[in-house]
Image 1 (cartoon, helix red, strand yellow):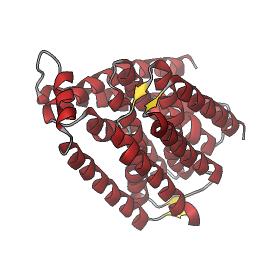
Image 2 (cartoon, rainbow, N blue to C red):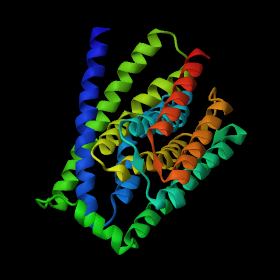
Image 3 (cartoon, rainbow, N blue to C red):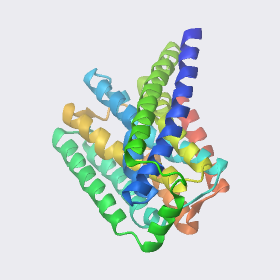
Image 4 (cartoon, rainbow, N blue to C red):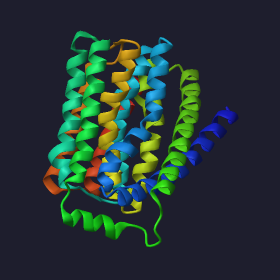
Length: 314
């Protein structure tokens, strides 16, 4: 028991420093490449911090733990919106770029609904997984194409946000790589220790996947998002979560289904409905005020606590 707790503590340290390095590197890349931190947050940071979910889901599918494979993604998307954005907003309210409201948040809702539609027959096939991967490629290209068309005002903001002592793009890339390595290693270490503890308590596989494993694999997003919010990098904070949710469905479930077709198993429609509902709710929040304040953050956090309590007790 003590060794498991020590592993969890070590993983939290790795996640903190990994998040710090990733935010610094992503900010540098944004200024050097001439694109907004939002674009970097929606792609490089979001995809990188989703690496633990990718490893866990593919490994679980190949190992026959289908419930954990699917539940990990659904639960991670729930945790990203309700827990991570909720806590980030409680730490520091985040301003929202119009692009999030106009394009990316609706895409997050669309891919959540697409997953529910794919699972209508109880499974995700290799063909459906391939279509999800194709959609991910289109989204990524579109995001960077949009970033290159940003207005001069936004470009001036990017320039003003650049560090006073110039840091090369190569240095920024190294920081991103180091951050991702720590995040992936820390996330994996924490998941292993959390699953060991949960299994010893007799918690079901789907419940573990939707709560403990999902939160564990979402800790890279948590570390990155909270650190970005505290440092005033709101675009990376919001972009990381929205982009991660999009990548989780299109990339992780897409690749997992291609490697091994997925069955819905004991993941419930209420779980999928919670994922879609939270995506819609946070979109309403950011649309009405173009910011995510402490009140909205508190609402999201309470909803996550209620859902997790219900799922672990179900």
